[in-house]
Amino acid sequence: MAKPKKDKPKKTNKPTLAEQADKYVCYQKSVQEPEHEIVFFDKAYKDAFGSKKAVHLREDFCGTFAVCCEWVKSSPKRTALGIDLDPEPLQWGKDNNLAKLNDEQQKRLRLIEQDVRQRNRPQADILAAQNFSFWLFKSREAVIEYFKVARSNLATQGLMVMDMMGGGECLEEDHKDVRTIEKGKKGFKYIWTQVSHNPINHDATFTISFKFKDGSKLDPAFTYEWRFWSIPEVMEMLREAGFSESHVYWEVTDEHGEETGEWHRATEAPSDPSWVCYIVAVK
Picture 1 (cartoon, rainbow, N blue to C red):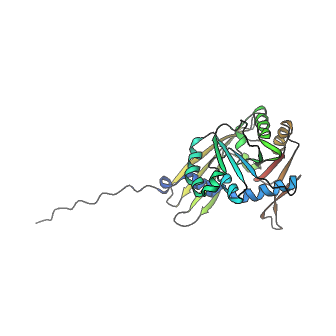
Picture 2 (cartoon, helix red, strand yellow; picture 1 turned 180 degrees about the vertical axis):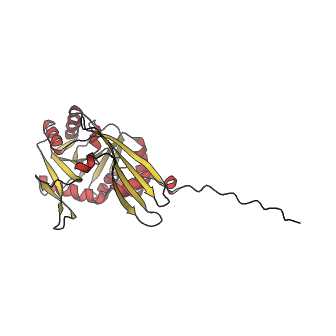
Picture 3 (cartoon, one colour; picture 1 turned 60 degrees about the vertical axis):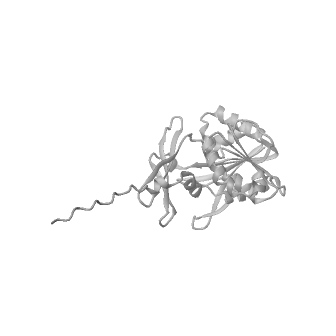
């Protein structure tokens, strides 16, 4: 007599690594180096004002405000103000970055959900507007308006720090920059894609995606709709907004052309196919 068939166990739908991933964790591991930013801020401030130390930081477009957190950790005298219009990354930062600070450090960090084009007190020694965030302003009038407000949010001896990118690869549609961020089972790849570029008005779309070991993706995890601004345009607009001077900081390379992590003021630079630099404006 044949034995009755046993019911086979049902297969469970195990979530993919992408479904389990946190896009903000991936972003911070891929894009941000808060410790490096603080070192650069200190250098730029010293270049501008000598031995005087910067105490108060304002981070516009702060997102998860990792730089603010690192700033207050760097000295018990330092305070930080983070400004962002999007409540989602602010809340994530509160749950994941702010929560890692001790009580005393948390008291020296203030967050405001608002448009960066508003005046706040106290005025900052350093105002950071990084990750190309001000590129969301697509006209000269809008950028100059923002720069004027940013200047008013700076103390008398104040600096505004921005980063810029450029090179032919940044204008090449569907060009991808792929980097392995972590290896092993929990490793993932960071993929920066130049999706589109309109040469007439310089509107451009970029995305950040993450690919995981099981082949799953967060694609895209982040999308950016910007105007692609150039260094001379930004420096001209800073001057029109009232800043007394501005400088480009370019990364120093060694004899083999490798990046050294050191940044110095420059008036000339090689025509690299993909570059990143800082612009530092003095109030």
